[in-house]
Image 1 (cartoon, helix red, strand yellow):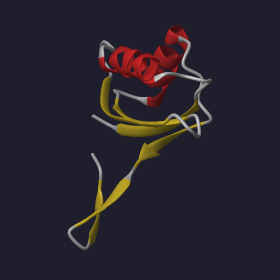
Image 2 (spheres, rainbow, N blue to C red):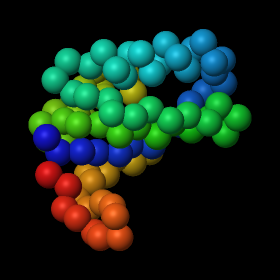
Image 3 (tube, one colour):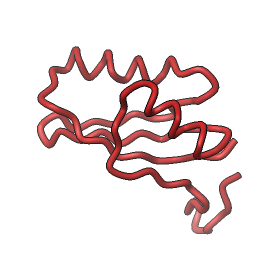
Length: 87
C-alpha cells in the first residue's frame, strides 16, 4: 500500500491530549498510521501513513478534522546505502 507523510500544526496541547490524538490516528479504518511523531513545544506533528491512495487519505483527514500543512507520497527511501522505490 502506498505510504505518505503529513505535517500538522498543533494548538497548545498536553501530553494526554497528544496521546488521544495519536490514538485517533491509529484507529483509522482502511488507513494505517505507521508512525506519529510530535513536538509539543513547537506544536508540530509528523505522521507516516499507509493508504490506498492520496484521495482516500485526504478524505479521511478532512472527515476527522485533521488539517495539514503538507502531504507527500513517499516514492523513494534510502536504506542500506541504496535508494530504493517504496511500493
